[in-house]
Image (cartoon, rainbow, N blue to C red; front, side):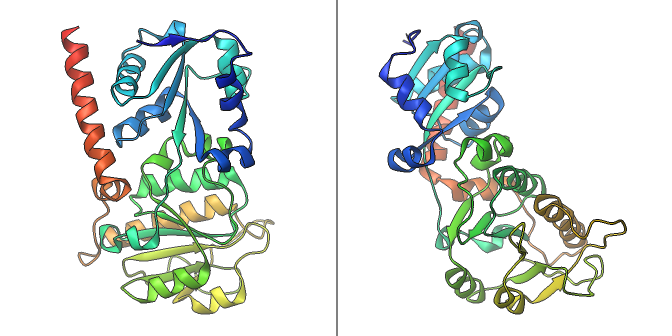
Length: 304
């Protein structure tokens, strides 16, 4: 049965609120996600929060009800609370109906199967959480196999990044690694490395793309280092017809990803990107348990 917390002084409220801080989040190896859409997306991939908070007014919503039951079935904590406490937890004046505390999860390059998708996204020293979240959403939209973060990039589990991803954090594998490891791994198998650069005359619409294509976006302010540019199989640029000299990193990545997708859809040799293939890499055991929990919840709700 869900329990109720209405006091700001409750130690759990302080603990969860502190997850907004990077140091506390890293020490706890947990993070916050908010919003029914995002938590439902997580649930559909087999990932459930350890602790679920929801407003009393939302208790009878079918998705909230199913989510709460699944969390309890998995041994988690389902807590009914007030809008004021939800606001405290999320840091927003108009909080979402649900907030979840999740265990951090990660993947390694060795976990990735490059044959599952024709498009992979790579970002070097990405600093803005909004950009990271938007790139994840783009990856989900084009069926990318995953996002590979090179070097000291923004934390994908920050509240801002999770919020900006709109649930894509749970559907796209995210790998954090260093350039040398990535480059060695990439060259050990098939893969074309395409870099976005201002220092080239090659228009992105005229370059050849052969799957799997790894799209490399450099740091927002400095671009990619020379050694990375030299390692690319092809450098391309997006024409700028106005006074601005470049696009936002997330926008440029989206433009490129859809160009590669359109090109590869015309090529029968390219692996077809599928969401099911990406989800299979996220956590096979977690997904299987998630399917079982969803089946139970569905049966319970229909008969109750």
